[in-house]
Structure formats: structure tokens, C-alpha cells
Image (cartoon, rainbow, N blue to C red; front, top):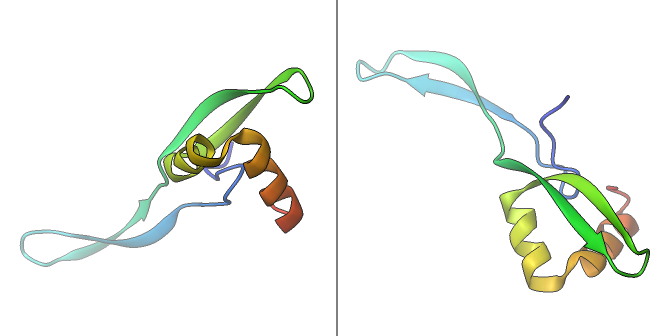
Length: 77
């Protein structure tokens, strides 16, 4: 199971963990993903998506139907 947002496509980044002595070692930065169920009234069904919290804020602002239409047009879903 990959750590990628189903809507926005956000995935993990790599970088350095920096200690107090400024020694650097590789690490990964993971996106803040949540598994959520959304109800789509047009289709009268529930869908389960793994979305980032920034995508959740967009869904709260615009609504799930508008967000799905936007991302389907971009070809991400």
C-alpha cells in the first residue's frame, strides 16, 4: 500500500535528518494521509479514499462532487 493521496497525488519526499552536531542522515517525509469515507449523492453511494489533509480542506470548501470533477478532468483519479 503506497503512501500517495488518491486525489492530489501527494507522495513522500526525501531529505536529511540533522542532528545537534549537524550530522546528516537520510530520512523520508510522509504526507499526512487519512482514510475517509465520502457520500456522493449523485451516485447514491459511499466511496473510501486515502486523502491528504490539504485535500480534505479543499473538499470541505468546494464539496466532494466538485473536487472529484476537477481531479478527473486533470486525469489524477
